[in-house]
Length: 101
Image (cartoon, rainbow, N blue to C red; front, top):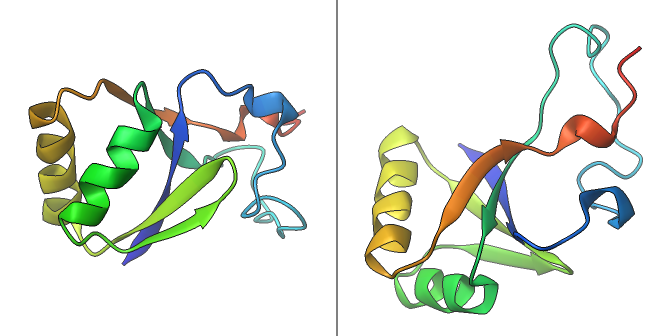
């Protein structure tokens, strides 16, 4: 089980203090292979409403919501639900704001 951040596509990631990164301990070898996946959606409020209606467990933290992912099939079903709801989304790495010298 894991968690996935959902954010509006228009958010400026460099200006956002994402709670899961704030004060987080980075892995020892983070410079070689470290990423934080998030789902950027074009209709943020509609996405939240749709996921809540279908009983996805969400925790809200401005400007994001975090969804608990039970397994790969659960995530695939969530993607299908969003597509069916007319929501455009991109799964992307949001750890690009971390210096990886």
